[in-house]
Length: 117
Length: 110
View 1 (cartoon, rainbow over the protein chains, first blue to last red):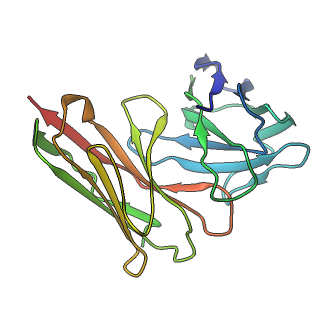
View 2: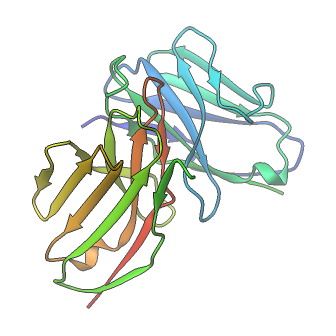
């Protein structure tokens, strides 16, 4: 099956620092990667859609200057939370899919827990 | 109306029983439908896709009613290991990305 990894699995940082999270598709090339976040007892919410070599598409209400996404290759996307604040503490999960069809299955990474103090 | 709506539960069910979950979605342009399972503090994992004709995978049966915009999941002969949160998920109809329900929490009791 398709495997997606994320690093780090958890991070604790001080308010004002930036945090980078990596998402990798290990055994397939991902045409598209997605970033979601989940607050406690809430549903996963899509933050942005990322295609290799092009700018990410952000969902309404997600600040693109705060959540920087770089999709440098077909197997790697990074999310940088800039100047993190306590309200950014959340569970960040990426997913990746092989093909271009919207019907393609998305494979999820194990998630990154971010705690901003 | 929420995009994907589910009863949050919890559903407390004895081992061996049959349990059914329902879900409704608001975007009539959605084209693909899924049930995911999420264990506490873990990422969601695909349980099964849902097709208009209905589909079965072992003890799990999923049904889709496009006219009513309604999806169901039936679990037969429930096991302790079925305890989890079950997420109803739909694609966004023409746009990439998935819309998740809040999930239904299932607890199987011995």
